Structure formats: structure tokens, C-alpha cells
Amino acid sequence: MTTKQQGHIKKWQDDKGFGFIETEAGESVFFHVSEFKARRRPNVGEQVVFITAPDKQGRLQAKQVQELGFVQQQMAQKNKQIRKRNSQRRQQSDFEAGQKKRLFLGVGFYAVLILLAIMNKLSWLVVGWYAILGLITYMMYAKDKAAAQRDEWRTSESTLHILSALGGWVGAMVAQTYLRHKSQKPEFRMTYYLTVVINLAGLLFILAGGDLEGLL
Image: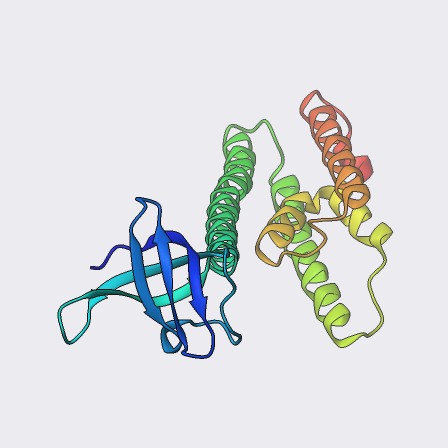
């Protein structure tokens, strides 16, 4: 692979269509206008990038002569695209890792509820309540996203939060993660976290001997 060199145009004879480039090593290299890639005539003194190759007589001459500024701009754009792709890959990786963590949290929560019910520390009614509310809440999120995409009547945020506070917060969490719905708005997220705290406080009340039968 031929190495690109950098230099500046030392001499240019426009009427004859050729000139000379002085390399960084101080050497003078011939080049023809046909090898100048810019859509204009070369200017004396401008910085260029090129490769060298022998002509038919074996003499070295400059080939693929490009403006240094253009090459630098192209490299900057390429590096920007690379950084953007790397950033997207990192974001996707972080998102997938977050998906797994949230799914594990949701499954773990339901597993704890089932274990408590098996140990007779929690009513199976509560387990069923959480399972049904989780499913309903997930479906409401899915319905709302579909409505948003079709520009139809939306489900109010207060309805989604009420469902979450009543026990559907796991379904809401899964929907926000996998459907990517209502996952970016800070105000909504803060209220969602509050509904989780409220619900868990209610669950602790039940576990502490609160009267669930009266609530149901």
C-alpha cells in the first residue's frame, strides 16, 4: 500500500498544465494537472496530500493530489461517523443491559410474592392482583403507544400512574423498557417512581398485618 505524503505546491505552470510539489523532506516532485483532484486549477503555496509513483520512464511523480483541507475535512467527517456508530453501539448495549436488569427485577418481584404466598405470609389474592394489574398496565401502555403512532385518542398519564400505583408498576416498567414508551419524559418517570414507592408501601402495610380483605 502506497503511503500518502504531505507537501505544498512550489511551482505551477498553468499554460502547460503541470507543476512541482515540495515534500516535507524538501524534495521536489513533478505532478500533472490530471492528477489534481479538486475541480479547479492548483494554487502555488497550497498544502496538498499525494502519493508518488514512477512514470513510464521510471521517474517519480505525484499522483492523486488532493487539497490538505479537503482531506482533513473528510477524515473529520469519517471520525465523526465512527464516533456516532460507536456511541450508538454503546447506547444499544446499555439499553439491552437495562432490559435484562428490569426484566430480572420484575420476575424477581413476582417470585418473591409467590414465595410469600407459599409461606402463608401473603394472600394468593394479592399475587393474582399484581399479576392481573401488571398485564393490564402493560396492555394499556401498548394501546397508548399504538394510539400515539396513529394520532388517535390517547390514554391519560394519570390513568397509567393510577394503574401503576395499584400494583401494575412491573407491567409499566416492562412496557417502558421493551416498548420504549413513556421512557424519556423526566416528569413522567419521576411520577412513575413515586407510584412504585406508594405501592410498595401499601404492600408492606399488608405484610405488617393490614386489613387487605377490607381493601378488596
